[in-house]
Picture 1 (cartoon, rainbow, N blue to C red):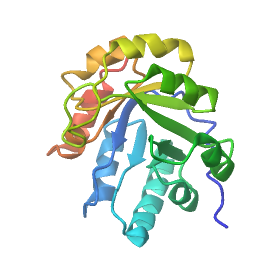
Picture 2: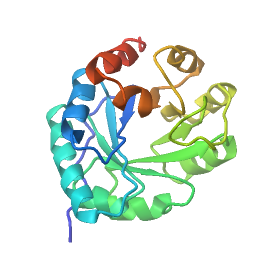
Picture 3: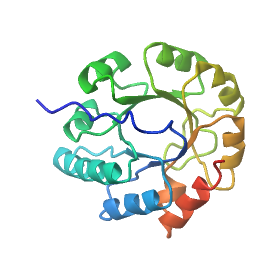
Picture 4: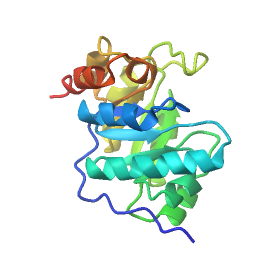
Length: 212
């Protein structure tokens, strides 16, 4: 049986650029390294293909790279992959496994995040059931999920009382991220505007510099 994820208790509170990969891509490791060099504070491995062998190889490589930078690697949707590659945790959407199942499989030290879209009630429930952070969005139109529910910055202000880090996602760029940070976002999750950039490190640095 694969080992449970390693402890990331030495990590600071989640805050800063939350970089979400846009694979499959041949230069995935180099792209993630550039994001880390630019100051990314969380990496999420997101790959919706069914190539399990490649996904495990890539996730394992990124887990090692992230440990070298003392940055947590979060696996999108896949609890077993998170366990197999010894990632820091998993991110769960509405159609994924429940928090309790993820906690049992990955251990108490795992970071478990939950997509809450535009629902404060879903966020309350996620925190009640042990989520370590909640994500809201989309705040802007997104090429990754063009039909995603739209959220207002007001939900970030309302969710501050939940007492866990909040991640904003959806069409976020260096030009519109500051308003979401001001509204209470601890992290901004970015896919296209970061990993489609010609200079990933430079764009990551722009995002990172927005955080006090």
